[in-house]
Image 1: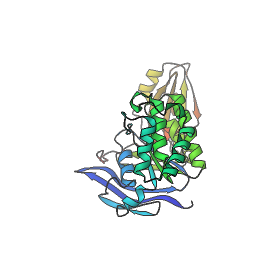
Image 2: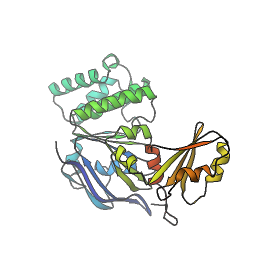
Image 3: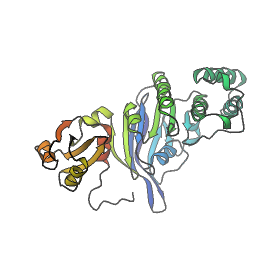
Image 4: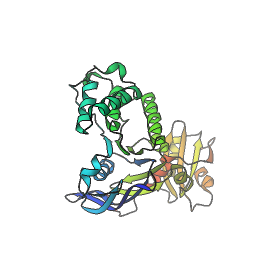
Length: 311
């Protein structure tokens, strides 16, 4: 697959007076892992529902896998997989029964159904759990079952809505290894998350805040292009230093990370280290460090004075 898997222009969804998604422009290259990064309520899930054809836009247009939405939503649904934020399979069915039911929904014949169920059982380490009720599985096991069901019909595009929010770090790491395998096989993946380390695993991301896209691009490029400098402070009275720096015109953000302060200073400041040193106590050290994705998020989601917060 080449070109773009998803294109959106001015995509908007309003619920009454609230715009959950506000004039979103989007371009997702085929075969990539693309992430929506943002807090709860920023519009990630609504955007996914718009791009899967489950919601009609209030304005704007989108084309997904060549299908114009919302007109061709039904045709699109046969070509995508969607893993919802909460476990949506039947808890009172076994693993095998859930997969057979999913295969029937997609209209698979008996031979393909048998082949694909065997494939996903092996791929997602579910072979010993075929008779277990889904409701009695652990969080990680349910996650693997949900992903197995989402890819059972071999979709070209997979939507994952905060898929790792309820699992432990090891399970999350293993899950991402599976996503990289799927991506290497040509599947385009769109994943929403509020975890910075997960967003860094994506090849491209869009930062969403209050329904609006605040920034997009490759994580490394966003960090390299950060319009701020990052100064790290170690030693001294960190709480006093933070209070002294807050509210200064050039200081964007001050956050304590363990035994250090991380200070974001506007790029226009000629000597950010000197600015920070004015506020720290004796014995403290300050030096410039490399930006991370959380720094990008903080800067991108700053609201200008007077900006409408109810996007």
